[in-house]
Amino acid sequence: MSANVQKNRMTRRVLAAAAGLATMGALVAAMPVGAHDRGHGHGHGHGHGHKPRTVDVQLLSFNDLHGNLEPPAGSAGNVSETQPDGTVKAIPAGGVEYLATSLRTARKGNPYSVTAAGGDMVGASPLLSGLFHDEPTIEALNKLDLDVTAVGNHEFDEGATELARLQNGGCHPVEGCYEKGKKFKGADFPYLAANVTKEKTGKPLLKPYTVWKKNGVKIGFIGVTLEGTPDIVTANGVKGLKFHDEVETINKYARELDRKGVKSIVALIHEGGAPASTSYNYDCDSPGAGDGISGPIVDIAKGITPKVDALVTGHTHQAYVCTVPDPSGKPRMVTSASSFGKLYTDTTLTYDRRTNDIVRTSVKSANHIVTRDQPKAADMTSLISRWNKLAAPIANKPQGWISADINGRGSTALEKPLGNVIADAQLEGLAPADKGGAEVAFMNPGGIRADLVHKASGSEGDGVVTYGEAFTVQPFTNMMNVVDLTGAQLVAALQQQVSGSNEASPKILQISKGLTYTLDLTKTGAARVVTDSIKLNGEAIDPARTYRVAMNEFLAGGGDGFPALGQGTNKLVGASDLDVFNAYLAAHSSATAPLAPPATDRITVVQ
Image (cartoon, helix red, strand yellow):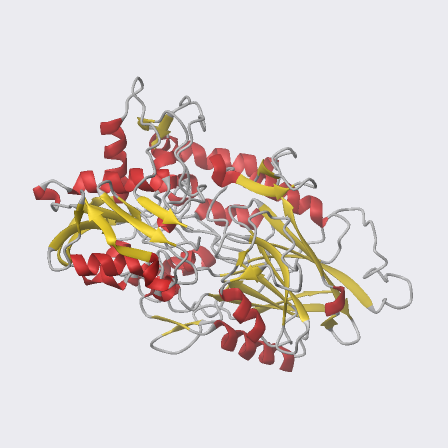
């Protein structure tokens, strides 16, 4: 569910916290959009002698784009919509050509419109963006007129120095400029990271907040990422940085904004929750305010000062528009717009010019689908085409063939067909004695970023898996590790899927063939893993025996709440996860004998 972060493909260097990051460019005020105002009777006041007391400010927001410039393929590109008769329909959505059109259409007739994002704009990106260190995505967001975003955990994939470059511009330090005569300009919107400080100085890494202004209307935006970012990012990515409590940080800067006379405040928080339904139009205020949502954002929302008027959230890739009571018991809007640009949220904030505050009882919000049946934004089509030409020689190379969709990111099952393929690829690639002698392999579910889709994405033909498609599934290019773990440590790792930091939101490891066990979800915590059911090749796991275990370097470092996997010894570093995945596709498929989706019978789930 939550996005798990690993090292990006080309990062093999020690990253230092960049100097001068605190001085970020001021927020560019939203450009007036739309020549014709439909007019709500608010905010005009030109030549009428006095301005009306209130003005409606439109807040458009989205989150977790992850560099998905092209429409995400397969089930990962669908939004679930509950129909009036109770059935659920899957609607293809997303793609920056459509997101641009949706936002530009929504802004028409709204003279006061501001666009904000909840983090993870980049990182874990498909090849079109990831190959170029996400420069294409920053360029697209500039064209979208994004006004402000919080950092997410993925903004730290390549460390603080690279994040500074994305903000301030300049060509990549190793690969240089990608287009002749063109220097990367950086983001013309501020990245906010109020709860991230430099260890050496204690000073904020980036701006903690920014104030959007228009005709005397002022709205402050405070941006934070989740405090647990270091647990889901490789050590190099967060080197020299400290991550602080979200609630304490937001409350501190809300007081500061209030002292400066900014009474209208929105918090952009890269942390989220889980609604009781995956349908974007589910009412999570039923039967009562916020009853239909659970997860970390609920406690965060309940702790944030009433000075903050609305919360734009992210990280869990879920869709919700809820009201969660603030500490004074008053309802407050908490929103999230799924992921990959498939939805956007339209929130109306009624601004009172006398108090300079938002009339909270008037706040309205709804999520809208970024449908693919609307016109494409021509400037985005041209941007995608330009970068695709540069990527084509690498992206279009065939790696293998599949007979049907093999679902990964789009699968809601605990054991995912693509998870089994990836784990088997890692076991096969690292089983030879000279490659590590692996007996079993583990893959973290959040590292599977897409599905393998049978339908052709370009001119390659149906069933062909291109390098670009394989990269989109595994964009981090983590190096594979093989380590010694005892049977007791193996059992502990399986228990950590459903206990400790993963108890509230389980992370079920994808496992290679030969390993089987039962997961009993009627129990709680570690007891959900039925220990005497755990077998490797039909034999019970021996707690005292040493096993050779393959996994990516992120998991081998104890990432994603698996400290037991970080206890491995006698480490051998192998090829990258993408290389072993592509080698497996080449060895197990051909045009005449494509790879079929594997059975999912390794984990027996009791519910």
